[in-house]
Amino acid sequence: MVCWDGHSIPRQEYDYAKHIGYQLGLRGLDIVTGCGIGAMKGPMKGAAVGHAKQHIKSGRYIGISEPGIIASESPNAIVNELVISPDLQEPFVPTHDAMAALQLDAHLPKHELASALRRAFSGLVAGNVKAFGIEQVRLHGPCQLSGDKKFLSSTDRLLQMRVRQKRMKLDQEKYQPCYQLVE
Image (tube, rainbow, N blue to C red; front, side, top):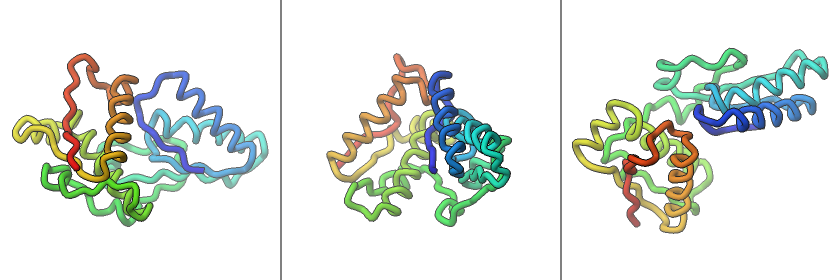
């Protein structure tokens, strides 16, 4: 079972993620997450308890990450198998040109869309909270994301919701998007 979200989640969502992990663990399912804290650790912790109740000693808690993240943040303590996915081994540097080159279109093959979204979200996190990305936005203005209008609108609503829910640890009253949507 794959569980994905971010670090900054409210306590009740962490508890919910842990409960879901527990239910999955009771059923003998292994867990795959981004291997960090918050929504990534909750399902693993719950599954570990569920596995223990079922006397499952071979539970797999797989963390998927990339070199840039692992260098700055260790996997959570429950991860017993760390995977650096082949498409994650080439670090994505979120320059304005790199962000503009991404194509976000729901009609792409699923693996290409997943890779483009991962890069786009990495760039948006960088533009909001990492020194390099913040400096890029300060120097060049918001980066541009292009693709299918309907898909981009859905992505924009998701990002705005994440800011309102304080999942990106940004001041929602002063927040200015570090991106612009273009067709």
